[in-house]
Amino acid sequence: AQTVTQSQPEMSVQEAETVTLSCTYDTSESNYYLFWYKQPPSRQMILVIRQEAYKQQNATENRFSVNFQKAAKSFSLKISDSQLGDTAMYFCASPIRGAQKLVFGQGTRLTINP
Amino acid sequence: DTGVSQNPRHKITKRGQNVTFRCDPISEHNRLYWYRQTLGQGPEFLTYFQNEAQLEKSRLLSDRFSAERPKGSFSTLEIQRTEQGDSAMYLCASSLLGTHTGELFFGEGSRLTVL
Image (tube, rainbow over all chains, first blue to last red; front, side, top):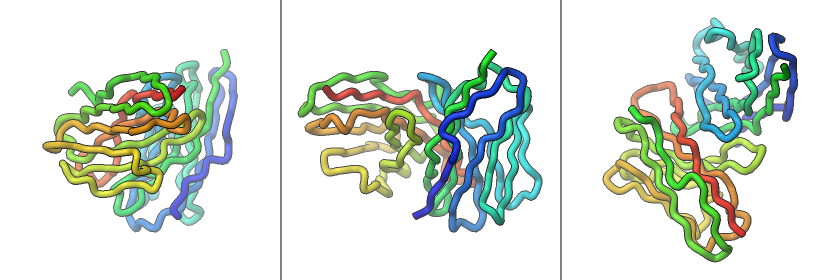
């Protein structure tokens, strides 16, 4: 079965620090996108960043960037200059069956402390 | 564009009752997904539609669960004879076939509590 693994159930850092959330995945797709989603407390899940597997350059969106290691099937999320509003559950997601659906990891609960 | 809308947002019911959730996807999106999320866990795939056709159902979707998407617009998820184990957040998401990213756009979810 194709799986996504997030090995850090919880993380906590001080405001303005940098934090990295890890994710490993297992997909048989040849070309695909990987995703990090953010789910704030009691709010909907929103896309943080996506990475196309064919691109060697790591994706960056403002304070968010990824470290994509295709051979290792690793896809970590780095949050720089963390802010209180970054407090949320973060989910890594990988496609299966021709991107017809996404499978999600168990999530990492990130808390940014003032 | 108002995003994905789900109703009701919260539902409390007694064991054995039937419940129905509704999802209105982003208007031009032809794919619609249902996921279930229990506390502290990631979303688990239940089923998805392409237009009005239900193309896949997870083994998580027991016979008590049924989903429809008449006319390829909104979708309903019905749970019959609810059990306490059905308590969860039911998430709806939509996407546009032809955008090769596979990105999903989520609603706020419908939280079910079975007493």
